[in-house]
Length: 254
Image (cartoon, rainbow, N blue to C red; front, side):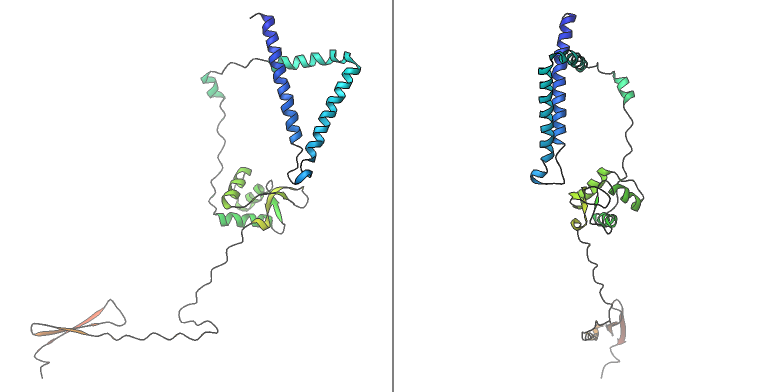
């Protein structure tokens, strides 16, 4: 392939890539006009406004070119240079040794949280305080102050998901705009403290005292072993103890 053909191919490829980039960036800019804190047609009103601005800009540019075609002589070199730079062939792959040298060191991992779901929910409730909710952008700093360990946004979201705490898209905080966060009324209710059983022998108010259990009397067991009569009686105070008494059979005869 001659040098002229390579240059023409690079310009054609660059023009295609440049057009795709302009379309993608324009579409992303239009989609970014959607409001997450609103619903219905009000949420997409910003997208329609931005789309109208794009159409108006294209129409104005077309009217300028129609009125003064000489403007193209100033625009075409700029577009040609941008297409030439966009059509630059990809670089050759880096050698394995050089690639290994350019690999950045792994980032320090976040410490694994040892908090239970109930403890984490209690911390979030303390972060909210007297407010109706708290923003996700503020939670990492507040949790770090309470626990003394670093918290990232990803860790906060993972902990909220594990604890079953929903995230709302329209949370208000004083002095800040409406943003994504956690509402106080979305937190699970704290588990009630289990009642403490009264000690043995204490009768609650309004109840009759319990009738004490009857004391069982141990029945002795007897058996004859040769000239001896062995009598075994269980200890009423110590179930593990047994009293054994042996007497001669001749003594008990009438």
